Length: 576
Image (cartoon, rainbow, N blue to C red; front, top):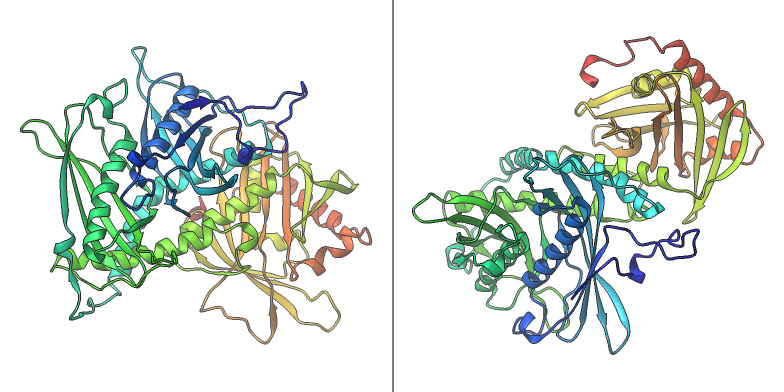
């Protein structure tokens, strides 16, 4: 059963009560509730993940179509990590709502929870983000209406959706580059006498797409294709370990083309590599009708575990890859495992769990950049800042959460927003207006959006050591008029720039600027800093009202921007 717009306590937001006293409901929200029956379960009495994927896709599609007002198809699904299994007799609740709409595509957020009716317990199973594309109508291409975020939670997801979209668009290219560079360094595959030949795990199956498998536009449901892929992947994993495997993760994947009623869907799976407690299975879906050549529909990588009686991962047998392609897949699986761990470590952690300084290297650049920008966007969407003081049109706000002090400085300048972004993006020029920046050098221009800097600041105490910081600066231009320009800063570690005796190594968890265009000539810019022990000494007197250095610093920033508003040389050409 599906109920559109139904409440779910787990999704409640503090701003849900409207002025009318009614509970606010997101207009795109759709909820599905299903009790797990034996027909939905495998022989272990657990809900088939394939069945769950079908329910998730159906719920998300209904949400997308509710917003678009027309038929929609699944374009891609981000990484999914399944935290728990679901048993027969338990209730699955799936909530989906559109986070943001772009020109013809939209991001739908999906939350899956489980409920035990007899103990009244609820717990999270997984969270996912799917991209849906609106289908053309007889009138032509559909121009999607904008999503208007109402609550703080919706504003946060709306803002982060633009960053997730950026990561999706470059994901395939970056993964390809990382795999080619990583596998070249891995050397030869290790041989084991008791290894299971990978050929033993190869599975192939064919499915005929019938009307129940398709929507009203005769396109095969994306969730149905995912379910069939999960089925062959589970068989492949079982052949390696001779036991029932549990699916833990599905990597981000894209549907490369449509499938329709009458298609024969050929599904192939093989175990690419077996690690100590997990294995990666590669799956491919291709379609054909009659004598036409195979069309590539989708490829995915799924990670399985085998659990013992205590629900702990068992040690898996070794795998012997077949020559050439098998060895290539074996090495690529090792590289993907590292990428997967980086992604989970950097992106999936709560902000309070991410270490102050994360090691930077090309393999995790995309995820560090995402985390950097997302952390700043989260601070920008907070609405419980407390105005501490105001002087010369410079406002100082504070916010204390999770035993951490956050600072926000806000002001307006008569300089176009693009030029403010242009001038503030180059940290080398910050010493022209910020006395805390004694030195600043570029360590690495990673790409046009991400730059690594070394910044030196003076000592806060007489005779003490100065501090140096290794900072990742991530820049973003607006996705549309509802987004600001962003310059996000956070500390990273680099092996070739270790701490030295001359300086104390400082760390920045989250800092940066948001730059909003108020008009063609007026800009509101806001500086944020999540104060770490290394930063707190520089701002504590301002927060306590014992100093006005913040005001003099940002007044100097305003003067710097005004003096350079017609300058074209703030950044080297490679930075744009």
